[in-house]
Each structure stands twice: as C-alpha cells, then as structure tokens.
Length: 469
Image 1 (cartoon, rainbow, N blue to C red):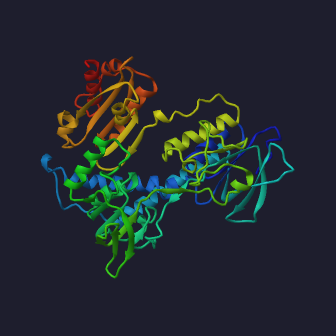
Image 2: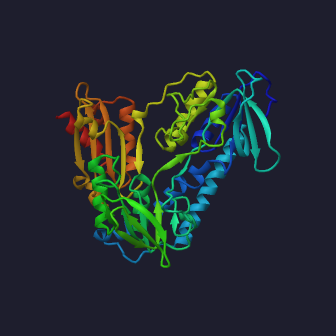
Image 3: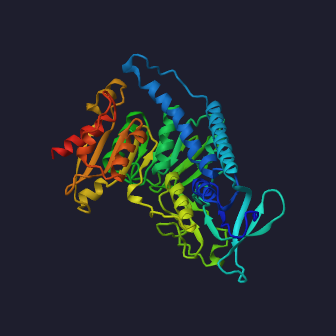
C-alpha cells in the first residue's frame, strides 16, 4: 500500500472491485485518500465480468428477436430471424471485458492503486485503530499492509444444489451460460425468481424450448402479484412451459442431456438445466471471525445504514451484506461507507426509495410503496392501474402488455411508489422514482408536460386519475 502522500493521509483498503468497491474507491480518491483496491478477477468484479453486464447484454439481443418476431401487426415481422449463439456470446464477453477495462482505466486515472489478487484481515494486537491486511497478489509475493479504513465488498456466488451437481456443460449456473457454443434445445430453469425468470425469458426469445420450475403459485413470487402474473401470462402465451407449485428435487445428466426430477416424482427431460436458486455471500477466507466481525448464519455481514460493521473502521457493502442484491444499491452503499469513514456529511441509505427492475420481456420495474403494503393497511395510500392497452404509443409499436400502477399518500397526495410492467419499464420507472425521492405530489406530476404519443404519458395520466380520486 502506498505511503508517499504522508502519514496524515487516510489509507483506505477495499477488498472487492465490483460496483460497491470501485465506486467507493473513486469517492475515496476524490477525497484525497491513499486508496488500494484488491480484486481477484478484474475491475468491475463478477458484476461486470460474469453477472449483470453479460446477462443484460445477452437479454438485449433476445429482446431484439422478440420485437422482430412479434411485429407482424406492423407489417414488418418475420418468424425467420434467428440468433447465432457464438456471435451473441462473443459480443457478451467482449463488452464485459471492455467495460472492465474502462473501469480499470478510470480507477488508475483517479490515482487508485489496483492490486489483482486477494486480501484478508489479520489480527495484530500491536496496532490500535489501524487495520492490518494480508494481501496475496496474483503475481508477486504475499505481503502485509496497514489501513485506517477497510471496506469489504466481495459480492456473492451462485448457490448450487448437492442434488444437482453443476458441471458447466449440461447443468449450469448463470455464470457458465456464455461458454455454450450452441443454444440449448430445451432449457430447464430451476428457480423462478428474478434471475431464473430473466434467463427463461431470454432463451425463449432466442428460440430454445424452456421449462421454468416455480415452487410458488406464480413466477417472481416476491414481486407485485399483478405484475408477476402479467409477465407469467406472456411467458405462457409465447410457449414457455411454466410449472408452478413445483420444486426440483434433483438434476442429473443423461446420455441425451439432462433430467430434472420434481419432488412429486415427475421427471422433465431437456438438453440443459440452469440452476437459479439464489446466491451465497463471499465472506469466507477474509479473516472475519478472527477479527471479531459479526457474520450471520447465512454468511452475510450485517451493516447499518452507513455501511458500518460492528468493528470500528471496517465497513461492508454490496451483495456480501445481504441488502438488496442490486448494483445500484451496492454502489451507493460503497459511496456512503467512504463518505462516512472520511468524515463527510452523509445521508443514510434509503432502501424504500430504491428502484428495481427485472429484465424479462416484458420488463417489471418498481419503486417505493407496494400493493401488498396498501392491501394490508401498512400504509395509507390510494392507487390506480392504467393498462398500456389504452396507450396510443404502445398500440403503435404493438407492445400493449403491461401497465403503470401509481400510489399516492392519502394525506398529502405525494407520490409514494409505483410499478411498471412493459417494454422498457427500466426507463419508465425513473420518473416515478424521482417523484418518490423528491416528494412530488400527483398534481405536480400530472401538470408536467409529456410527449404525445409516449409510453411515459401513462405516468402523467395515472397521476391525473389519482388527483380525481
């Protein structure tokens, strides 16, 4: 770790180079700290190299095919468009590598010292208020280094099942999909949460037969019920075999491919199986227990709203904390950690204001108050649902599935939250998130000029209807 800036300069060590880590490093460097970022795989971490960036790049290609296949009403559709998996996966890898290189260059330009390797805390009772790390670079000899502030941002790894041994060829995690040289003939997706639903949607659009195993009564059971049911109906209409109320007991390779056995004894045969049953935090081999840092029974590191662990000077951010597994949340946690550690004014993270999106087709985006909150009486809000079937722009582009749902506080008329299901919902949720964050009233939203025709016009229309409530 560099010491050329002098002893008075704060030394910040960050273990993990994903969104939490690299955003924290940039903030720390901007504040004049001596910053070392330790990352095993590459700048951007798994998020950029094998998770978020690759998956969304792959999904973008599948969305193009969906638009082509379902544009017959426009007079330009064709069922003959196909995907070249080698070209698609090549582009996925290329863009991920490019993004990682861009992040690395940004860090270097900011003055961050990047160490490619692994780091862990080590106990040394000879130091007070200074933390010691053991660093094992990929090249060179291991060494010890001191830091005034440590941020742990090591992320998470796909969870696997002992009854479904992953081999990277036929039974896969989502990080291994991009090594396939051909599209699965029949992909069985185990798990219908966000990740499972996204890949099931994408591979269906790419031309694979898809069976989605869902243990609940609908896909994406933790999302808004009306929204998830809308997406599920689209899946079925497009030919996906959705098995609700089913649970995978095992997955095995066969001579012809794979078979997935359900807990009721049903066996589903396919060419490949994708295991999407959550993630486990990367909190092992960091010296946390010896250092006295609290780790919960699932391996997550509990933190407060400014990302502090129970040990002074040690912070944690991102998926390893078990807080919303979103790159945007990880990045904000990392920034907040550094602002707090270096004495800057900071506002604790507001998880109620986090905008989230599921990149299925149609997409599902949400922010703030939920329908479940309203129905249970947890919040005193009113809501309105406006289907895209009545939106002129949606009709023009022949993408009428979905809706805009908007909530407002009864007492003040301030926008409390919203849900969007439809094409480009990830873009349409931002005006609602802005309204929630800035405490805009439905009247203020309703009086804002929108483009005609536009999908976003439905947001203003929903606000007008709430004014009339």
